[in-house]
Image (cartoon, rainbow, N blue to C red):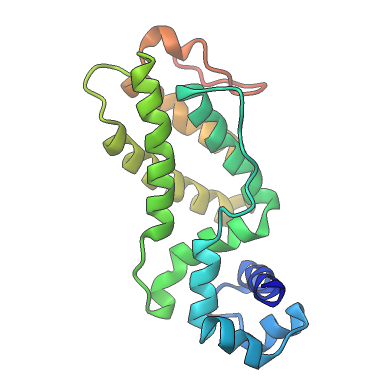
Amino acid sequence: MRTRAALVKAAAEEFDLAGFAGTSTTKIIKRAGSTMGALYFHFGSKEGVAKAVMAEQAADLPELSGRSGLQRLVDLTLELAQELRSNVLLRAGVRLAVEQGAFGVQDDTAYQLWITRFKEELIVADALGELREGVDPGAFARVLVGAYSGTQLLSRISTGHADLTERITELWQYFLPAVARPEVIGKLEFGTRGPETGT
């Protein structure tokens, strides 16, 4: 398993630098200190190792604790913004999920992972009475993942994710009045800077 883990890490680093098209299996095995035989044994192809990076993108994310409901969801989205600046496995997995058409894949597993994770927190928020009446946790989770994906892509292209925390805070500024009860919005924390919702 050490060889496989080393190959996934090396592949993530290479895909993060050059994307799928710009990465060769030779570069991956050289960075991993491994062999072509090991790569093909574990993954079968470059496409196979790319799928593994996509599938395992959240494998080493830290666990959040101490909060629940909407605050936990806000914390999670902001933590992801920070991780995208420093966590190469997450960053490469997200990049490959966007680029996957380039290597003949149409797989929404990575997106469904985050939809499920966000939905779980929204269900808790609903149970706590934090959501406006009529807000569907599953539907909003899909909208949030779609919006987050587009926001992080624009941030990556524009600033290398340097402004992503600010952009995600901005995203919440517009979403919260639509999904959260007014009395809840004012209690949410966004670090040193919160969204100006007018409530």
